[in-house]
Figure 1: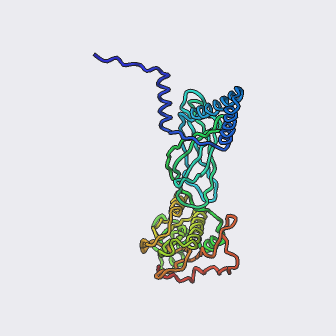
Figure 2: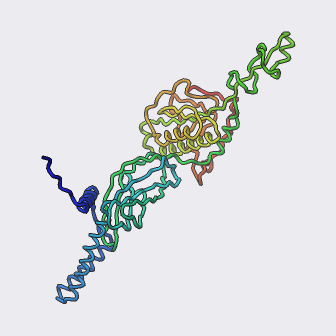
Figure 3: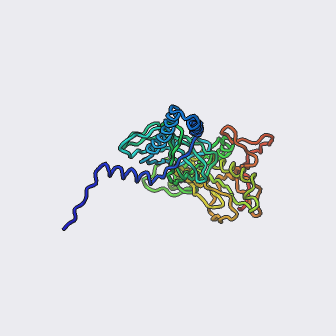
Length: 401
Protein backbone atom coordinates (compact mmCIF):
# COMPACT_ATOMS: atom_id res chain seq x y z
CA UNK A 1 0.00 0.00 0.00
CA UNK A 2 1.48 3.28 -1.10
CA UNK A 3 1.77 5.76 1.80
CA UNK A 4 -0.24 8.91 1.34
CA UNK A 5 1.93 11.97 0.71
CA UNK A 6 1.21 15.05 2.75
CA UNK A 7 0.74 18.16 0.62
CA UNK A 8 2.61 21.19 1.94
CA UNK A 9 0.65 24.45 1.49
CA UNK A 10 2.01 26.83 -1.10
CA UNK A 11 2.56 29.61 1.45
CA UNK A 12 4.67 27.28 3.61
CA UNK A 13 6.75 26.22 0.59
CA UNK A 14 7.43 29.83 -0.31
CA UNK A 15 8.33 30.70 3.26
CA UNK A 16 10.74 27.73 3.40
CA UNK A 17 12.35 28.84 0.14
CA UNK A 18 12.81 32.35 1.49
CA UNK A 19 14.37 30.97 4.65
CA UNK A 20 16.81 28.89 2.60
CA UNK A 21 17.79 31.99 0.67
CA UNK A 22 18.41 33.82 3.90
CA UNK A 23 20.52 30.98 5.31
CA UNK A 24 22.54 30.80 2.05
CA UNK A 25 23.44 34.50 2.46
CA UNK A 26 24.26 34.93 6.12
CA UNK A 27 23.41 38.48 7.04
CA UNK A 28 25.55 40.66 9.25
CA UNK A 29 24.90 44.12 10.58
CA UNK A 30 26.77 47.22 11.64
CA UNK A 31 25.76 50.51 13.19
CA UNK A 32 26.44 53.54 11.04
CA UNK A 33 27.08 57.02 12.46
CA UNK A 34 23.37 57.91 12.45
CA UNK A 35 22.67 54.69 14.31
CA UNK A 36 25.18 55.49 17.04
CA UNK A 37 23.65 58.94 17.43
CA UNK A 38 20.18 57.41 17.68
CA UNK A 39 21.33 54.87 20.28
CA UNK A 40 22.92 57.68 22.29
CA UNK A 41 19.72 59.72 22.20
CA UNK A 42 17.72 56.60 23.10
CA UNK A 43 20.00 55.97 26.11
CA UNK A 44 19.53 59.55 27.33
CA UNK A 45 15.72 59.34 27.01
CA UNK A 46 15.72 55.97 28.78
CA UNK A 47 17.78 57.35 31.68
CA UNK A 48 15.45 60.36 31.93
CA UNK A 49 12.41 58.06 32.01
CA UNK A 50 13.92 55.90 34.73
CA UNK A 51 15.01 58.92 36.77
CA UNK A 52 11.78 60.89 36.51
CA UNK A 53 9.28 58.04 36.36
CA UNK A 54 7.13 60.07 33.94
CA UNK A 55 4.82 57.96 31.77
CA UNK A 56 5.15 60.33 28.80
CA UNK A 57 8.94 59.97 28.78
CA UNK A 58 8.56 56.17 29.03
CA UNK A 59 6.22 56.34 26.01
CA UNK A 60 8.78 58.30 23.98
CA UNK A 61 11.50 55.82 24.98
CA UNK A 62 9.28 52.86 23.98
CA UNK A 63 8.55 54.43 20.59
CA UNK A 64 12.27 54.93 19.96
CA UNK A 65 13.04 51.32 20.88
CA UNK A 66 10.21 50.06 18.66
CA UNK A 67 11.46 52.15 15.70
CA UNK A 68 15.01 50.84 16.19
CA UNK A 69 13.97 47.18 16.42
CA UNK A 70 11.47 47.53 13.58
CA UNK A 71 14.10 49.10 11.37
CA UNK A 72 16.48 46.18 11.94
CA UNK A 73 13.68 43.73 11.14
CA UNK A 74 12.60 45.48 7.94
CA UNK A 75 16.13 45.92 6.56
CA UNK A 76 16.78 42.23 7.23
CA UNK A 77 13.69 41.17 5.28
CA UNK A 78 14.59 43.49 2.36
CA UNK A 79 17.84 41.55 1.83
CA UNK A 80 16.22 38.10 1.87
CA UNK A 81 16.06 36.23 -1.42
CA UNK A 82 18.48 38.50 -3.31
CA UNK A 83 20.92 37.16 -5.89
CA UNK A 84 23.70 39.16 -7.50
CA UNK A 85 25.71 38.53 -10.65
CA UNK A 86 28.72 40.39 -12.05
CA UNK A 87 29.32 40.74 -15.79
CA UNK A 88 32.91 41.43 -16.82
CA UNK A 89 34.06 42.67 -20.25
CA UNK A 90 36.52 40.59 -22.26
CA UNK A 91 39.35 42.91 -21.20
CA UNK A 92 40.13 46.41 -20.00
CA UNK A 93 42.87 48.92 -20.84
CA UNK A 94 44.97 50.66 -18.21
CA UNK A 95 44.16 54.35 -17.65
CA UNK A 96 40.93 53.92 -19.63
CA UNK A 97 37.53 53.79 -17.87
CA UNK A 98 35.80 50.42 -18.16
CA UNK A 99 32.17 49.62 -17.38
CA UNK A 100 31.46 46.56 -15.20
CA UNK A 101 27.85 45.42 -15.14
CA UNK A 102 26.00 43.99 -12.12
CA UNK A 103 22.57 42.38 -11.96
CA UNK A 104 20.46 42.13 -8.78
CA UNK A 105 17.58 39.63 -8.72
CA UNK A 106 14.77 39.69 -6.15
CA UNK A 107 13.38 36.14 -5.81
CA UNK A 108 10.81 37.06 -3.13
CA UNK A 109 7.09 37.02 -3.81
CA UNK A 110 6.46 39.86 -1.33
CA UNK A 111 8.01 43.23 -0.46
CA UNK A 112 10.27 44.88 -3.08
CA UNK A 113 13.82 45.75 -2.04
CA UNK A 114 14.71 49.42 -1.67
CA UNK A 115 18.02 51.26 -1.35
CA UNK A 116 20.38 48.33 -2.00
CA UNK A 117 24.08 49.15 -2.36
CA UNK A 118 26.44 46.69 -4.02
CA UNK A 119 30.22 46.92 -3.48
CA UNK A 120 32.80 44.93 -5.46
CA UNK A 121 36.07 43.80 -3.86
CA UNK A 122 39.41 42.49 -5.10
CA UNK A 123 41.07 39.41 -3.63
CA UNK A 124 43.11 41.68 -1.32
CA UNK A 125 39.85 43.08 0.16
CA UNK A 126 40.31 46.43 -1.62
CA UNK A 127 37.03 47.86 -2.98
CA UNK A 128 36.92 48.32 -6.74
CA UNK A 129 33.61 50.05 -7.29
CA UNK A 130 30.01 50.32 -6.11
CA UNK A 131 26.54 50.47 -7.61
CA UNK A 132 23.18 51.50 -6.13
CA UNK A 133 19.72 50.04 -6.76
CA UNK A 134 16.85 52.31 -5.75
CA UNK A 135 14.19 49.60 -6.12
CA UNK A 136 14.06 45.97 -7.20
CA UNK A 137 10.54 44.60 -7.59
CA UNK A 138 9.52 41.12 -6.54
CA UNK A 139 10.26 38.28 -8.95
CA UNK A 140 12.32 40.59 -11.16
CA UNK A 141 15.87 41.70 -11.88
CA UNK A 142 17.52 45.07 -12.20
CA UNK A 143 20.75 45.86 -14.03
CA UNK A 144 23.22 48.68 -13.63
CA UNK A 145 26.96 49.22 -13.88
CA UNK A 146 29.85 51.00 -12.23
CA UNK A 147 32.86 52.55 -13.93
CA UNK A 148 36.42 51.76 -12.88
CA UNK A 149 39.81 52.94 -14.14
CA UNK A 150 42.70 50.55 -13.53
CA UNK A 151 46.03 52.39 -13.15
CA UNK A 152 48.30 49.52 -14.25
CA UNK A 153 48.14 46.56 -16.59
CA UNK A 154 47.92 43.02 -15.23
CA UNK A 155 45.42 40.42 -14.09
CA UNK A 156 43.00 41.70 -11.44
CA UNK A 157 41.22 39.05 -9.38
CA UNK A 158 37.73 40.14 -8.33
CA UNK A 159 36.74 38.10 -5.30
CA UNK A 160 33.43 38.93 -3.63
CA UNK A 161 30.42 41.22 -3.73
CA UNK A 162 28.84 42.91 -0.72
CA UNK A 163 25.07 43.52 -0.82
CA UNK A 164 23.96 46.04 1.83
CA UNK A 165 20.94 48.14 2.70
CA UNK A 166 19.95 50.79 5.30
CA UNK A 167 16.29 51.02 4.29
CA UNK A 168 14.15 52.60 5.68
CA UNK A 169 15.66 54.76 8.46
CA UNK A 170 19.40 54.48 7.82
CA UNK A 171 20.36 53.62 11.40
CA UNK A 172 21.43 49.98 10.97
CA UNK A 173 23.11 48.61 7.86
CA UNK A 174 22.64 44.93 7.19
CA UNK A 175 24.70 43.16 4.55
CA UNK A 176 25.82 39.81 3.24
CA UNK A 177 28.77 38.68 1.11
CA UNK A 178 28.60 36.70 -2.12
CA UNK A 179 31.74 34.90 -3.24
CA UNK A 180 32.11 35.28 -7.02
CA UNK A 181 35.79 34.96 -8.01
CA UNK A 182 36.59 36.21 -11.52
CA UNK A 183 39.63 37.52 -13.37
CA UNK A 184 39.84 40.63 -15.50
CA UNK A 185 42.83 41.08 -17.82
CA UNK A 186 43.89 44.72 -18.07
CA UNK A 187 45.88 45.50 -21.20
CA UNK A 188 48.78 47.98 -21.08
CA UNK A 189 48.03 51.63 -21.68
CA UNK A 190 48.06 52.61 -25.36
CA UNK A 191 49.81 55.92 -26.09
CA UNK A 192 50.94 57.81 -29.16
CA UNK A 193 54.29 56.65 -30.54
CA UNK A 194 54.28 58.57 -33.80
CA UNK A 195 57.95 59.57 -33.61
CA UNK A 196 59.33 56.03 -33.45
CA UNK A 197 56.70 54.60 -35.77
CA UNK A 198 57.58 57.12 -38.49
CA UNK A 199 61.22 56.12 -38.24
CA UNK A 200 60.22 52.50 -38.63
CA UNK A 201 57.81 53.09 -41.51
CA UNK A 202 60.45 55.02 -43.50
CA UNK A 203 61.67 51.66 -44.80
CA UNK A 204 58.56 49.58 -44.19
CA UNK A 205 57.16 49.51 -47.71
CA UNK A 206 56.30 46.36 -49.63
CA UNK A 207 59.30 44.06 -49.97
CA UNK A 208 60.20 41.48 -52.57
CA UNK A 209 59.99 37.88 -51.37
CA UNK A 210 62.52 36.55 -53.94
CA UNK A 211 59.89 34.13 -55.20
CA UNK A 212 57.92 34.13 -58.40
CA UNK A 213 54.79 36.24 -58.24
CA UNK A 214 53.06 39.33 -59.59
CA UNK A 215 55.25 42.07 -58.17
CA UNK A 216 57.25 44.76 -59.97
CA UNK A 217 60.85 43.61 -59.46
CA UNK A 218 62.37 41.31 -62.07
CA UNK A 219 62.86 37.74 -60.83
CA UNK A 220 64.23 36.12 -64.04
CA UNK A 221 63.77 35.43 -67.72
CA UNK A 222 62.63 32.12 -69.24
CA UNK A 223 61.29 30.69 -72.46
CA UNK A 224 57.83 31.63 -73.66
CA UNK A 225 54.94 29.19 -73.11
CA UNK A 226 51.95 29.17 -75.38
CA UNK A 227 49.07 31.30 -74.11
CA UNK A 228 51.11 33.79 -72.05
CA UNK A 229 50.39 37.49 -72.44
CA UNK A 230 52.52 39.38 -74.96
CA UNK A 231 53.18 42.19 -72.47
CA UNK A 232 55.49 39.88 -70.54
CA UNK A 233 57.78 39.25 -73.53
CA UNK A 234 61.34 40.48 -72.97
CA UNK A 235 62.18 41.77 -76.45
CA UNK A 236 65.89 42.33 -75.88
CA UNK A 237 66.47 38.71 -74.83
CA UNK A 238 64.19 37.55 -77.62
CA UNK A 239 66.29 39.38 -80.22
CA UNK A 240 69.53 38.02 -78.75
CA UNK A 241 68.45 34.37 -78.52
CA UNK A 242 66.22 34.35 -81.61
CA UNK A 243 63.32 32.81 -79.58
CA UNK A 244 60.55 34.23 -77.48
CA UNK A 245 61.53 34.97 -73.87
CA UNK A 246 59.25 36.21 -71.09
CA UNK A 247 59.89 37.98 -67.80
CA UNK A 248 59.08 36.65 -64.32
CA UNK A 249 58.64 38.98 -61.35
CA UNK A 250 59.22 38.76 -57.60
CA UNK A 251 56.27 38.12 -55.36
CA UNK A 252 55.68 41.14 -53.14
CA UNK A 253 54.82 40.58 -49.50
CA UNK A 254 53.94 42.80 -46.60
CA UNK A 255 56.90 43.49 -44.29
CA UNK A 256 56.93 41.91 -40.86
CA UNK A 257 57.92 43.93 -37.83
CA UNK A 258 59.47 42.14 -34.87
CA UNK A 259 59.22 43.76 -31.43
CA UNK A 260 61.83 42.49 -28.97
CA UNK A 261 61.37 43.01 -25.23
CA UNK A 262 63.88 41.11 -23.12
CA UNK A 263 62.31 40.81 -19.68
CA UNK A 264 65.31 38.93 -18.28
CA UNK A 265 66.99 40.49 -15.25
CA UNK A 266 69.27 39.39 -12.47
CA UNK A 267 67.78 38.45 -9.11
CA UNK A 268 68.96 41.67 -7.43
CA UNK A 269 67.21 43.85 -10.04
CA UNK A 270 63.89 42.03 -10.03
CA UNK A 271 62.49 44.09 -7.15
CA UNK A 272 64.36 47.31 -7.88
CA UNK A 273 61.76 50.15 -8.05
CA UNK A 274 63.55 51.97 -10.89
CA UNK A 275 63.81 48.80 -12.97
CA UNK A 276 60.14 47.96 -12.36
CA UNK A 277 59.09 51.50 -13.35
CA UNK A 278 61.16 51.42 -16.56
CA UNK A 279 59.86 47.93 -17.33
CA UNK A 280 56.27 49.19 -17.19
CA UNK A 281 57.14 52.04 -19.57
CA UNK A 282 58.79 49.51 -21.92
CA UNK A 283 55.63 47.39 -21.92
CA UNK A 284 53.50 50.45 -22.75
CA UNK A 285 55.88 51.28 -25.62
CA UNK A 286 55.75 47.71 -27.01
CA UNK A 287 51.95 47.55 -26.73
CA UNK A 288 51.52 50.95 -28.40
CA UNK A 289 53.82 50.01 -31.30
CA UNK A 290 52.06 46.68 -31.81
CA UNK A 291 48.66 48.41 -31.80
CA UNK A 292 49.67 51.03 -34.37
CA UNK A 293 51.31 48.47 -36.65
CA UNK A 294 48.27 46.16 -36.56
CA UNK A 295 45.96 49.09 -37.29
CA UNK A 296 48.09 49.77 -40.40
CA UNK A 297 47.36 46.21 -41.60
CA UNK A 298 51.01 45.22 -41.17
CA UNK A 299 52.27 42.01 -39.63
CA UNK A 300 53.99 42.11 -36.26
CA UNK A 301 55.53 39.53 -33.94
CA UNK A 302 56.60 39.72 -30.30
CA UNK A 303 59.71 38.17 -28.77
CA UNK A 304 60.25 38.11 -25.04
CA UNK A 305 62.44 36.08 -22.77
CA UNK A 306 59.44 33.87 -22.00
CA UNK A 307 58.35 33.00 -25.51
CA UNK A 308 57.41 34.06 -29.02
CA UNK A 309 54.19 35.20 -30.67
CA UNK A 310 54.54 34.56 -34.37
CA UNK A 311 53.93 37.27 -36.95
CA UNK A 312 50.34 38.10 -37.76
CA UNK A 313 47.89 40.95 -38.19
CA UNK A 314 44.34 41.87 -37.30
CA UNK A 315 42.47 42.46 -34.06
CA UNK A 316 42.64 38.85 -32.82
CA UNK A 317 46.41 38.75 -33.26
CA UNK A 318 46.73 42.11 -31.50
CA UNK A 319 44.69 40.76 -28.57
CA UNK A 320 47.12 37.84 -28.26
CA UNK A 321 50.05 40.25 -28.06
CA UNK A 322 48.32 42.51 -25.54
CA UNK A 323 47.31 39.51 -23.43
CA UNK A 324 50.94 38.40 -23.34
CA UNK A 325 52.15 41.89 -22.41
CA UNK A 326 49.49 42.21 -19.71
CA UNK A 327 50.79 39.05 -18.03
CA UNK A 328 54.48 39.65 -18.68
CA UNK A 329 56.72 39.67 -15.61
CA UNK A 330 60.40 40.09 -14.87
CA UNK A 331 62.15 36.72 -14.91
CA UNK A 332 65.62 35.48 -13.98
CA UNK A 333 65.72 32.59 -16.47
CA UNK A 334 64.89 32.79 -20.19
CA UNK A 335 63.80 30.44 -22.92
CA UNK A 336 66.09 30.06 -25.91
CA UNK A 337 64.90 31.65 -29.13
CA UNK A 338 64.83 29.46 -32.24
CA UNK A 339 67.34 30.49 -34.88
CA UNK A 340 64.58 31.46 -37.33
CA UNK A 341 62.44 33.32 -34.77
CA UNK A 342 63.48 36.81 -35.86
CA UNK A 343 62.32 38.33 -39.11
CA UNK A 344 65.22 40.63 -39.95
CA UNK A 345 63.27 42.90 -42.27
CA UNK A 346 62.22 45.34 -39.57
CA UNK A 347 63.16 45.01 -35.90
CA UNK A 348 62.31 47.23 -32.94
CA UNK A 349 63.96 46.54 -29.61
CA UNK A 350 62.57 48.04 -26.41
CA UNK A 351 65.09 48.29 -23.60
CA UNK A 352 64.66 49.17 -19.93
CA UNK A 353 68.08 48.27 -18.47
CA UNK A 354 71.73 47.87 -19.45
CA UNK A 355 72.79 45.03 -21.70
CA UNK A 356 73.68 41.84 -19.92
CA UNK A 357 76.74 39.74 -20.93
CA UNK A 358 76.17 37.76 -24.09
CA UNK A 359 73.43 40.02 -25.45
CA UNK A 360 73.66 41.88 -28.72
CA UNK A 361 71.56 44.45 -30.52
CA UNK A 362 69.50 43.32 -33.51
CA UNK A 363 67.44 46.46 -33.85
CA UNK A 364 66.77 48.88 -36.66
CA UNK A 365 65.05 51.08 -34.07
CA UNK A 366 65.85 51.05 -30.36
CA UNK A 367 63.69 52.50 -27.58
CA UNK A 368 65.22 52.91 -24.15
CA UNK A 369 62.50 53.21 -21.51
CA UNK A 370 64.94 54.98 -19.20
CA UNK A 371 64.89 57.93 -21.61
CA UNK A 372 61.09 58.02 -21.99
CA UNK A 373 58.09 59.20 -20.05
CA UNK A 374 54.33 59.20 -20.56
CA UNK A 375 52.55 62.55 -20.56
CA UNK A 376 49.05 63.36 -21.78
CA UNK A 377 48.69 60.03 -23.59
CA UNK A 378 51.97 60.38 -25.49
CA UNK A 379 55.35 58.68 -25.27
CA UNK A 380 57.88 61.51 -25.01
CA UNK A 381 61.57 61.89 -24.35
CA UNK A 382 62.49 63.06 -20.91
CA UNK A 383 63.56 66.71 -20.79
CA UNK A 384 67.27 67.37 -21.31
CA UNK A 385 67.95 64.34 -23.53
CA UNK A 386 69.53 64.76 -26.96
CA UNK A 387 67.64 62.98 -29.70
CA UNK A 388 69.72 60.36 -31.49
CA UNK A 389 69.65 60.38 -35.31
CA UNK A 390 67.56 57.63 -36.90
CA UNK A 391 69.56 54.58 -37.99
CA UNK A 392 70.29 53.90 -41.64
CA UNK A 393 68.74 50.49 -42.35
CA UNK A 394 70.89 49.89 -45.41
CA UNK A 395 74.14 50.22 -43.53
CA UNK A 396 73.19 48.80 -40.13
CA UNK A 397 75.26 45.87 -38.98
CA UNK A 398 73.44 43.44 -36.75
CA UNK A 399 75.17 41.19 -34.33
CA UNK A 400 73.95 37.77 -33.32
CA UNK A 401 71.76 37.65 -30.25
